[in-house]
Each structure stands twice: as C-alpha cells, then as structure tokens.
Amino acid sequence: MTQPTTATELCDLTATEARRLIGTKEISPVELVESCIARIEAVDGAVNCMVTRAYDRAREEAKVAEQMVLDGEELGLLHGLPMGIKDLEATEGIRTTWGSLINKDTVPEADQGSVAAVRAEGAIILGKTNTPEFGAGANTKNRVFGATGNPFDPDLTCAGSSGGSAVALATGMVPIASGSDYGGSLRTPAGFCGVVGFRPSPGTVPAEGKASALMPWSVLGPMARTVEDASLLLQAQMDDDRRDPFSGLVDPRLFSSVDGLDLGSIHAAFTPDLGCCPVDKGIADTFKARTDQFRGVFAEAQDRAPDMGDIHRVFEIFRGVTFVALHQERLKNHKDLLGPNVIDNTTRGLEVTASDVGWALVEQARIMRNFIDLFDEVDVLICPAASVSPFPHEQLYVDEINGEKMPTYMRWLAISYAPTMAMACSAVIPCGVDHRGMPFGLQVMAPNGKDALVLAVAHALERYFAGKADLMRPVPDLAKLKA
Picture (cartoon, rainbow, N blue to C red):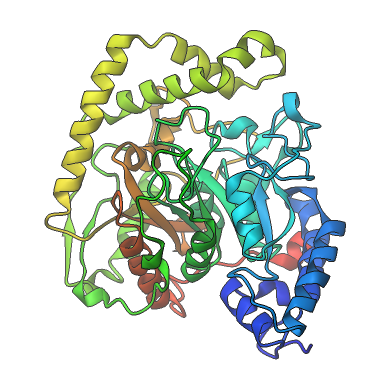
C-alpha cells in the first residue's frame, strides 16, 4: 500500500481521511499504527500523555485489520484507526489506573461499554492517556504518572481531566481519543491544546457502570483534531444501554453528516462570561477580537447571556454529592493514597444537607428552563472555552482572576460547569491563539438534545476559520518537542 503524497506523515492525517484511505487500500492500518507509535516515541518524552502503551497488541490488531481490507470484508466506522483511551475507562488487558495509587496495578478483565463499542467499529487502542486522580480537577497530574505538559509549552498545564487525550491529538500521536466531562473535562483541555472536544447530551454515549446512574452531569464523549472526526468517533461510541437511564434519547442517524449547514441561516448569541463567570480580561479581549471577525456570517449575532441564577452554589452542592457517592469509602479507608482534590471535594460533600440538595434541585431546574428559553430566540450560544490562558502545571488550579481571589479551586471552571448544570451539549473548537500566544478555543452550545445542530455549526465555523491566520487551528512545534 502506498503513502498518499498529501501527507507528510500518516499520523498527521485526519481520522476521516485515514479511514477513507484504508478503505481504498491506499494506506495500511499497519503503516498507520507504526507512524503513530513513532510519533509517540519521538514526542511523548516532552509531554507525558500516553502513560500506558499497548504496542504489541495494537500491531497484531493492525495486521488483522489490514487482512480484512485485502479480503474485502465489511469494515467498521473506525476500521484500522489508532486511538487513545482516557485512563478513566476500563480496557480489557490494558492497565487502567484512574490516575490513582489505589488502582496503579489494575488490569481490567473486560472493556467497559464505551471501549467495546469503538473496538467493535475497528478502532485499535494504542494506549491510555493521562488524567488527574479519578478525573478530579482541571490539571492533568497525579501521583502515578506525574504531570502532562501542554504541547505548546510543556511547563504549562494541558488542563483536565481529559488532558492526556487532548495532548495526544494535538501532537499527532493518534487521530481520535476518548474523553469524559463533568465541569469541563473534555472542553477545557481541548481549548488549552487547540483540538476539538464535544460534550454530548447525557446518555448519548452510555456509561453503564456509573456509580450514580441518576446523576446526569458526567458524560463520555469524543475528542479529535476536527469536528468531522469527533462526529465520526461519536457515531461509534453511541449506543442504547438500559443500564444508563439517559441512553437512547438521541437518534444516532442525526450524526451521519455534519456537512451542509449554512451559517447565514443561524441566529447566534455571544457572551464572554455567560453573565456569571470570572474571565481573565485578556481572554475576554481575545474573545471579542476573534468573534468580531466572524459575527457577520450569521443571520443574526446578539450579545446576551442566559439567566444562570445561583449557578455556583448549585454546582458545588451537586459536585459534593457526586464525590460522596463515588469516594466516601475511599476517603475512609485510603485517605493516605488520595490527592487533595478528591479529599477536598468529598469532604465538602459530606457537609451538604438534605435541605441543600432540595434547594439545588429546584434552582437547577429553574436555571435549565431559563437556558432553554433563550433558544426560543437564538440557535446557538458562543462563549470562550476557558476563562484563563494555560498556567504552570506545578500550580494545581487558578486561585485568582483579575485580582479577585477564587472562593473554591473549581471556580475558574465556571465557564464550562455552568453549561453542564444547564444541561447543555457543547463543542469546543480551536480559534487561533490568545493574548499570550497559547491556543484559544470557542464553546458552541445549545440545549440538551441539540447535539447534531451544535456539531453542524461547529463544523461550519471550523471550515470558515480554515486558512485565516487569526482563526485557524494552531499547531505545536513538534521539532521543539522532539528535541
């Protein structure tokens, strides 16, 4: 099989193009896997994102995938595509640590559903991508593997908790990777690393083993370098599993193509802060400068924000309750092995009262309905992906914005956790660089269930940004990372 002349290295192909070329026998899954392995070996020493590797198994699976092509067999959506799996997802025969010393030697006996689904569509798992301990916090570092560096400056954070996946994508180690999102864990790393992250509606990607099945906040979703690739991965991840009570609510046929939408028919709202979130002045200025360059493509561009009420207290209450559900036994029995984020969140959660939860349930419902009401007048809402520029990964979190002390270690993530509480689906796409020369991302969102619309708008914007110096996706200096 011959290498296409349009690509310098196979690992830099988009997933969609690589899959097409595999199907036409122009490239081999074996060649693609070897190209990705070579990139990991050349670059990962600088960024530390692919923390567990499954090369031998991947090479064997690539040979099988190649033979299936040559034999004319029916091929899956992701046939022959190398993939990184976030280290919060159980992978059969491949170590899964959840970033925790408690599980540092765990090798699951079975894939969880989201992993089994992509394997069934032909994906080849190259390894596990780094994450904070149990996904707690937006800085990808833990006591098992250490910190993952930002591909544009390894001394800075890639955010989290899907930081390892974002870095692997930005550096061309894999064309697709998995992630998960509660308060921004797919979206913030995508923004910090110049890639695409999509937070789907709850249950779109079933989480059949989630401890708190009736809590919709944590979702699984795709990450990629393009919106089209993220949509391709999402189609493979989607399923209907009754063990997740939210699954099966979104029709997978809606995602067959993200092409064809005219931005001139879309009514958009723009807000630098959702009306309630602390945002660094440099980020707010960048947001205005970037959006001023493309507001005119829409049928209408309004400056407005939804009524988010007391969103911060709502988030703190539900976050605390979730951590109690997941970690109170670990806090009781293994506190010495836990990091500060898990301890802090669980301890806070143990102080939450039934009265607090009752209030939060009512306030969240009100906020969600206010958010939905906004979309009687607009189709999508656009805001920054993150409130700050990437910061040193030695700093666990952002404790001050514009001179204002943050009341909790999570407050700097309000720009992403507020949409979570409003039950939004949201895509983050790259949009040039910020005031410090680091990747800048936009968050495109709409109410729960509008996933296909959000992806279509994000894809159309991505197409519009292509080739425009101030708006196009930034690419890290691989030669510098290799050195």
